[in-house]
Length: 244
Ligand SMILES: Nc1ncnc2c1ncn2[C@@H]1O[C@H](COP(=O)(O)OP(=O)(O)OP(=O)(O)O)[C@@H](O)[C@H]1O
Ligand SMILES: [Mg+2]
Image (cartoon, rainbow, N blue to C red):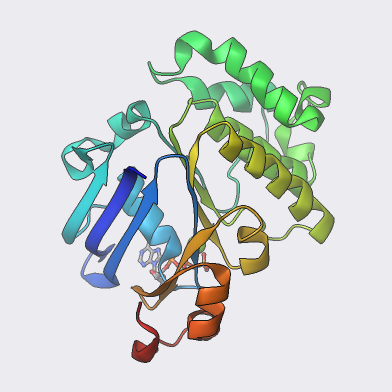
């Protein structure tokens, strides 16, 4: 398999505080990979480094054989990287459809925005039903669908999904992850940040556990469970004996 996104020895944080000590991971072309860890372990910070919201102190990020850190953040969307952010961040006072169109402003996606809209509506029929409704009036689950749909409007090669299951009912998590599986089937590669390991491994074959800014283990859910990395990452403690 060919790597699409690679992080090597990433060290990153905010001002002078180091959050990611050493993060290396790979997402291959067409693959769904889970990044699992407790609150504050550095999952969102990892995503921010990929999208360019923060500049790493050290390390390397490669996307489609290009040095991503040499690409300005606003141009990374045009390479095919889309983020579905933590907490959804839909615009509450505009309609569902207007929210979706906001996801397709880059040159890569603009010409095909009508077709993208239709495919998002096919994936999430609920959004089609509510297309003219203000986004803020939708349920939490519907807003999460909207956030995923908006990120797909940029025609990504790689989708970064930050905790899509957060605050949703088990039923809604099932519906949403069914849709994520369909997105993966269409060939889009996915880096899926989750605290819900069960939900993540419904779509990911492989994952990484992160604790205190370090990758502590990688592999299948069985391998991660066996190594104890999931337990230690969720307790927020770094267990060097579980290094992969
Ligand atoms: N903008 C910021 N400025 C300073 N510190 C930050 C900022 N954002 C996050 N941090 C700190 O970085 C650390 C990692 O945060 P991050 O948001 O990456 O964790 P996370 O794994 O996504 O957690 P969660 O599961 O709660 O979303 C935390 O200690 C947090 O307080
Ligand atoms: Mg987070």
